[in-house]
Every structure is written in C-alpha cells, then in structure tokens.
Length: 203
Image 1: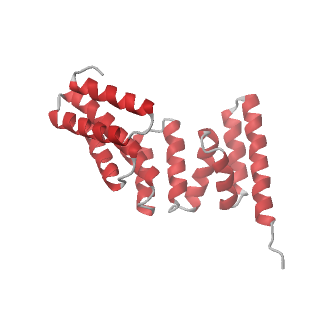
Image 2: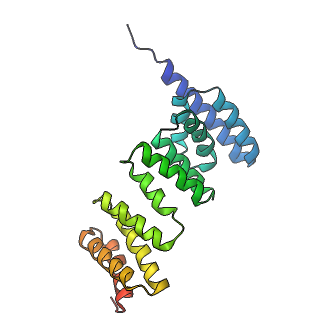
Image 3: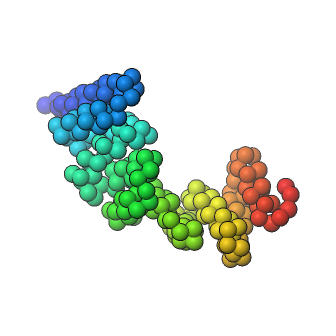
C-alpha cells in the first residue's frame, strides 16, 4: 500500500496560507491583524504543521513568535521550540527574565542544545554573572568558538568597567586561544586588535 501524503499536503497548505498572511502583512503593515490571523490559524492546525510553518519564518519574530507560542503550549518539553520562541521574544525586546526562563526550560529539556545555553548566558543582566555563564558554556562546549568570543568580549568589558585584573587576564587568555584557532584573516586581525587594546600596545 502506498504511504499517505496527506500530512505533507496539509503542511504545504498551511505554509501557503501563512505565506499569504505574511504577504498581506507586508502590504498593510497591520500587526494586530497579522496576530489575529495567526492565532485563528494556529487553533485549527496540528503541532507538526505549525512547526513547519514557523521554521520558514524563524527570523521573522512577529510571525514565528505567535506560532511557537502555540507549539510550546502544546509541547512544553520541546527544546527546539522553546529556543525558537525565546529568540523571537529576545528580538521583540521581551526582556531577559522571560527569555532566560525559556532558555532554562530548554536546557532542562535538552542539555545538549547549544543555542539554549547561549541564550541563557546572553540574558544574564549582571556583567560579572554573564562572564561566569559564558565560562560555563565555553567549558561545556569545547569547540564553541562563538561562546569563547562572547566570553572574551564580556571579560574585557568587565575588566574595563571595574578595573578587574582577573577579568583582564581571562579576556587575554581567551582571545589568545581564539587567535590560535582563527582560520580567516579577518578573524586574526580582529582578535589581534582586541589583544593590543587590552595590553595597551599597537598591532
């Protein structure tokens, strides 16, 4: 017996509907109307359909957010959806408390989700606490150069703001590790400039 294609057809149909809604939004610029249409559509759609449609607009927070809200409500342990919703909230300025809570929930659901750890570190309001969080992320994911870059940048900012020699030493050491792993000329130049600034020397 041939496998049913109904699920794929439903998802394609929902994506087309969302595409039309987004196109209308681009023309009218009516956020309230957009949200009302998405809310109505979400009620009648399966979680799989919503996820597929939301992925298409992951970087368009006013569309992804409402769709992922429904997905998370239905599947509170879905780490990928939690991270996507947290990212959408962050882009809309919902604040570190709400975003950090979603990131923590995603970490609890899937400790291997690197994006969740990044959001968790990013949303720490205290500069010193943020450095400590990025240290944890960099230690957990040894090959995560973005986490190391964030650690170096935040440690450097802390060192400058509080004249902290420990933070300064951490920033220099982290930038040095980034320099040794840099593979692109632009990266090398950027890290060398950061190191020179911290050491008070010129490139």
